[in-house]
Image 1 (cartoon, helix red, strand yellow):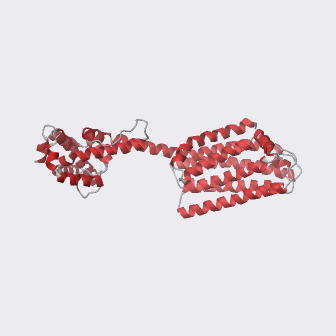
Image 2 (tube, one colour; image 1 turned 180 degrees about the vertical axis):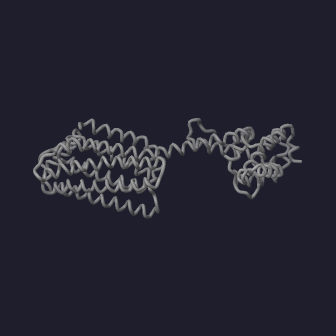
Length: 411
């Protein structure tokens, strides 16, 4: 595999890391997100520094023959540790136990990295090898141990990853299971890479020459394994984020009927700041909920508890469950109050309410999602919004109040 075969995967990892960077800036305390970014960064560095042109350049810059060998092996060990840490954080569990496992993984591979450096310093590698360091120095004291150590460390990580991801895949469904199975496939390629490396090194120990396994086949298997594994790590996270975004936009759309019903009232008492059309979905939902709360504050003097009670009884009689009946009753009361407010353009009822209205406003500020001063708890705005559009009870209340004035509603 030539230099491009290394640089293309490295570039792919760099692009993936760039895509993740904004999320990392927003939530850098998230251990799962940090683990993903560290894994992508280390994977990119491994391929970049393992490319023969980079190996030669690094050796030249440092002035140390074969300096790139322990550097790449250390990066591979760190990458293996990052994969294990990511799976541990991904699976979750008691935070104390998760932190303890991560510390053991980090400490264990930290010891391996230190040992690799020490063994390289103790060994002698006077001939620069860009592609076949493993097999060329397979029988050299200290370097032999260095090569075996890094291969064993990668094998332990590969087997552990396959076992953890395979067992976890049997317990979950959906995109998470698909991602875990893809990771297992990727690590099977990694184990094949290690098998070719071990085979070539052992052949050297026995006086045979199977260097092509290490020099030609192993890099291809490593590239395939790393890229497949990266896809497996990214798919569940990306799909979960897409699902969360879809759910947020769905909430935004479902709040539409209630927001449009209250928009004339909210516009008269609006105190918020309008947001740009390109704002995130979460912010748009928050703004829409704020507009709904503002509209409800302006309607409090027009809310009819008796109408709400009758609407709730009608909804229960029609077969709605208690939660749905409450939402339909609230929606009916809001629809009637909007018409009552429209029939009182000068706000005479608001002026007459006086101090009583101020007290109810204070109550509403404390629990703005509740449209009436009842002890049922906060309302489900999405249910109310859907009831405005779909409930026969709300439609009946609208029909009865269409020709009445606002004072008629409070008989």
